[in-house]
Image: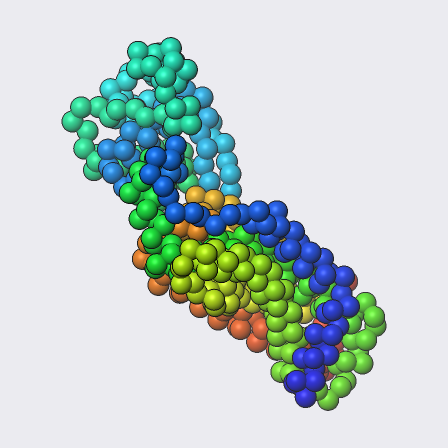
Amino acid sequence: MFGQLFISECRQLTRSIIYWLSILALAFTFVAQLGGAEIMAEPKKGQAEYGYKQSDDQDVIMRMTLGHLLEEYSWRSYTTYPVGFYKSVTLSEEEEARIGEIIEETTGLSGTDQVEKKISAWYSAQTGGGEDGPADMAKPMEIEPAAGLDFARFEMLMDKADHILGGGSSYAKEYRGSNAKVPMTYEDAMDAYRELVEKDSLTGGYARLFSDYMVIFLGILPVFLAVSRGLKDRRAGMQDLIYTRQCPSAVIIPGRYLAMVVMLVIPVLVISVFPLLGCLKYASAAGISADVFAYVKYTFGWLLPTVMAVTAVGMVLTELTGTVIAVLVQGAWWFISVFAGTGRIEGGMYGWNLIPRHNTELNWKGYHENFPQLASNRIFYACFAIVLVACATFIYSQKRKGRYRLSWKNTGRSKK
């Protein structure tokens, strides 16, 4: 009975315009973001540049963080991401004075005039008009810390600045390191390349990058499909007929759920064949051993829990209310999740976000060291989805017994 229902539900999904629009959205995302991506070639000595890396040098972190603080102080505007949302913060005069005190202690610059002169000197150097000659315009501002300032005191003052700004700023502990980007040397580039081809078997890094883009859209698209399927019988006037059928609720709801999850995962696997073939072609030419199953592993390990959770949210809220409110709820959750990951896109800081980010084929070390957190995250959302499906099954069974009928038009209970 379950197998027949599952096949029937899959067939119905293939006749859904929402389903095909979801697939088109995923395909368009791949083509737009990764369609023209090239495999990282082995670095050669003498290249003009080798990219940038995040530095863990305390002196670099201090200089670049202070440079960023001075710029925002001069603009009188600070960028923060409280609970993941972008927010431009304008401080009161008292709060600006407190930031000024932090700047004076950390840089020795007192007052707005000295800060602006320092910034002007920096930009003058960028254009060749300063004492230090021309500089790289792409390089972020660096300000030397005050004499005697140690890193512990610097961290304490940056925590204070973040508190004044309301949290989520570039001066928070979890974001300070991202301020420090330094050019990679040939040796740095070779180390990153070796990690990619040896520890990640080439395809592992690109499978993570693929998952990074796919998970953004899979964090919202399944809810449309779940809501559409949940309301289909209601729109067709088939609800009462289905409620009287012999098929158990414990078969109908899980069958529908599994059909939606499977039918969403299949196109992801099909799309992943294209970047996989590109990786295998490069690996064959370069004599590299590649993991043929990397994209399959990441699809089920990284993407599937998100698909499961979002689909389950759509199902349970649609069964509960008989409305499209699940789209609004999931839309809000998706929005928060996407922006919460903006400061963590290079991987290694996965947290409990529904949409874990790793927007690079590199940083195997960050992925490897924080894999237990990522695994816990993915297991949690898979379990969360199963609980929601159980709730949807219970609600559905109660409706079939006439004990519970809720919608925006009718909030009363029917007679038993």
